[in-house]
Amino acid sequence: MPTATSARRSAPSPAASPDETEWNLRVELAAVYRLVAHFKMTDLVFSHISLRLPGDEPRFLINPYGLLFEEITASNLVVVGLDGEPVSPDGHRVNPAGFVIHSAIHEARPDAHSVLHTHSRFGCAVAAQQGGLLPLNQMSMEFYGRTAHHDYEGVALNDDEKARLVADLGDRNAMILRNHGLLTVGESASRAFLRMFYLERACEIQIAAQSAGQNLVLPSHEIAEHTARQLNNEHPSGADDHDNSDNWDLAWAALQRLADRIAPDHRS
Image (cartoon, rainbow, N blue to C red; front, side):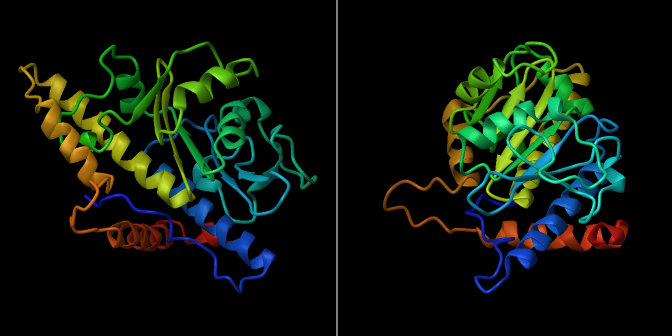
C-alpha cells in the first residue's frame, strides 16, 4: 500500500498552454470516472466527481447529468461555476443539486482541487454504523483519527447545509457522510481517487470481517496512530523515515494504463 505524498502526479508542464492544461485535466478526470466505474463504486448517474480548473474565476469540470460513468470522456465533461450551472452552453445538462456538496468544499478549501463523492455499497454500509470506520487493517489505519463525519440532513439540496458540511470536514481529506456515503478530496483528481480507493477497500474489509461473526481484533491506539502517521508521511520533526512518495506516482501510472486498456475512449 503506498504512502501519501504531495501532488506531483498530474501537474501540467510550466510550458503548457491553457488549452493543453485543461485538456490534460479533462483526460485525468475522465480516467477517474472510468476507474470508479471499473471498481464498482457508482450509483447510476447520481453521484459526481469535480475538478477545479486553473484561473481567477472559479470553474470546475463535472459529469454531464444523465450519463453513466462508463460514458464519460474528456470532451463531454461540463464546465460549471460555483453555482453548478454551465459556464457556457454545450448541449449537456448538469445536476445543480448534486453540486451543493462539491461547491461548498471547493469554496471553503482552496487545496481541494478535486472532490469525489460515492454512494457505494460498502461505503454506505459503514456510513450506517455508529462506530464508523474501525482500524481493522492497514488500509483503514491510513484514515485513523483523520476521517471527518457529517450527519445526514436529507438530500443535499439546501445551501444552508454548506456551512455545517465544511465545518465538519475541517482540514481533513476524507469524510463519512452518515446514512449517505463517502467523500474524499485531493489536490488532483488522481489523489482524490487513490484516497477513495483505499477508503472504499477499508469499508469492504470491515463489512467482510463483521460478517464472519467472530470477535474483532483491534490494535491499540498507539499502533493505529503510528501506522496512520507512516501512511500519511507525517514524520516527527527530525525523523529520517524513508519517504515513499513516488509510490503514489507509480500507483497512478498503473491506473492510467488500466484506464487505457479498459476504456481507451475516455481520452476522446
